[in-house]
Length: 106
Length: 212
Image (cartoon, rainbow over all chains, first blue to last red; front, top):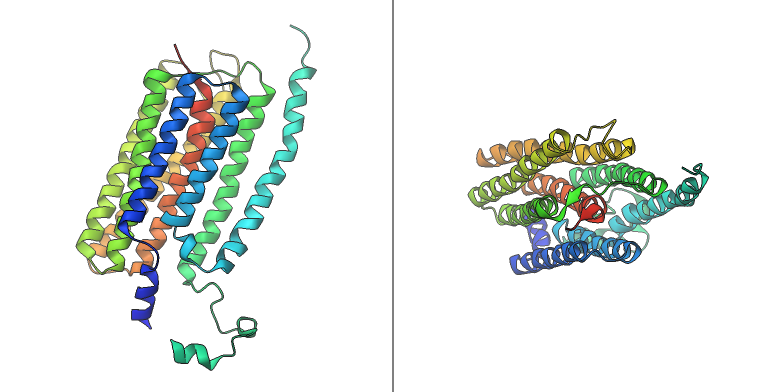
């Protein structure tokens, strides 16, 4: 049983894959820093940064945290509700946009 | 394993109990549950930061590209590289090489330690040179200091706790204690700390970069 568990741990993961993921993460970080240096317009910057961050998070979760090689049921138990709760928080952003307009003129 | 699998009927067998529906050990599943709840905490704090920023059109941009952004990029590099060394520690432990595991965990701790030292000097510069505190700053937007220090402070606390956790694991592994799953669970925590920084770095630092 234990030898089987040891074999299962090794499935789908090797050093060259981890190194490739690490390089991909570094390249994406480099692109983000370059965008900051070029002072890209705010909305484009925010969209690209968030997009890259989500890709980076997905790579870390899938490969470094090994979720890609776990059972699908583990992913389905943990992540849909997490994403749903985070998206729910965004409902309040409309209020944040309204508040600056309520300021008395200086 | 095959005899075990054939002992139970494949259809609906998980629902009859006595099986592990996630095919994982309890420690790992427990750590996953903790990390999910922790990500909600960080999401809420990142949201609070974003909300405060949108409500304040005069939100400051206190991070000069050189040195602050370059500094935080080096911090990101340290954290990303420490994630790679942590993966290699888990890999070594899975192959039963305890000495290599301890070496890789120590390398991870060096990366994490460098992150904390650089982060603390970044904080001290903000506090002593820019006169930013949790309640006040020269730009008249007190929420900047409040949200910035709360968010990065909570993250730094996680990194410091991670360093202590890894030190305990490394010591135990070196003395022949702990199993591969224990190193893997500590790795999950460490990667999560790295993952959170992948959101804090762009949203807090890069979005507030000042060039020229």
